[in-house]
Image (tube, rainbow, N blue to C red; front, side, top):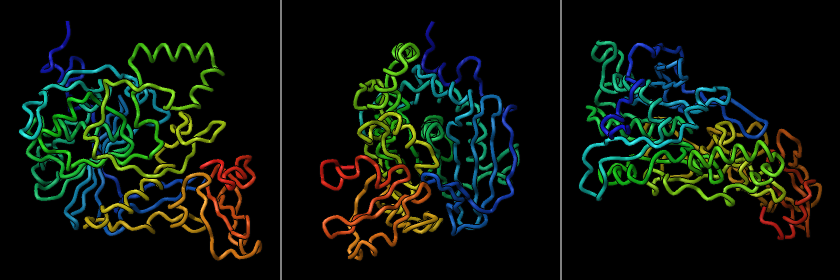
Length: 411
């Protein structure tokens, strides 16, 4: 017997239990993150203007679902961050692979667009969100463990939901349920990094009907393959896994050709398509043509360490910094340890050739060259002009370098 949409809000066996999630404060006054570009990695202060962050975690260890709450009394802002998939977590991979659709009753749509009150949602994402959502709601509505205002988020503060990958989906779904369930506080903004498709078009229509899309910003690296997923239906997925197990080399070849060889399922859609903000990434595709849209390169492009530079580029070059009254976003927050950080952020793709007008001789052209695995900025003279390229995986000795310079290959 199929569950009705109303029953889907609290599926059997996944009731919203309040005794399985741990709460704890973290002794940190800064919002730190690890920024990785190729082989280089550094810890950066993601919000340098604020130095009074209070950080708390809400962890469901049984299913490895984590959320964190950042609060700043000085800025009067709070950020609820949902963690993405951990590569070593079997529980997280199980969540991601549970791509059955679950009907969810959202309530009456708004007046701005015709929409259904029911949306079909990624079952794994939805069910796991229930494990931390009650605790998030307590924080958001200003109290926790029955103590009004002591640990929660004051009602007059700005509230932001965010996350990467799985965490991005949880952030969007949490914002959806905050609206659907009539929370006394809903987020002022939802910033989702590298979010996969998480529901059918009905969810997007429901957001548009309530005029919520202005709250959502979906930041995506242009060749991040995860943002295309899910590709196929569950049974098709099993067929692909079986085929790849039996035909390893053939499967690897097909995977290298990437999403252009796939036919994404039309049952899935992104929430608010116009909310997407595309940014460059630091990974090229991995196939014989070094194309952006190889599946293997696209998966590597999704990893948070490699994409953080791309995200930083996109965010600081958008109009977001003009509206930033809190963190102090600026380009120099994400410098590269070597070479010229601004130029590297502008040309993070492999063989992103640019002309150096100061390189008037071979000696001058090679002066700033650091063609090694840690820097990989290379320059060489061609027809009296100094050309520069940069990437962590390509060098001037790459077999395609000559074709790039001759204009036969774009990258």
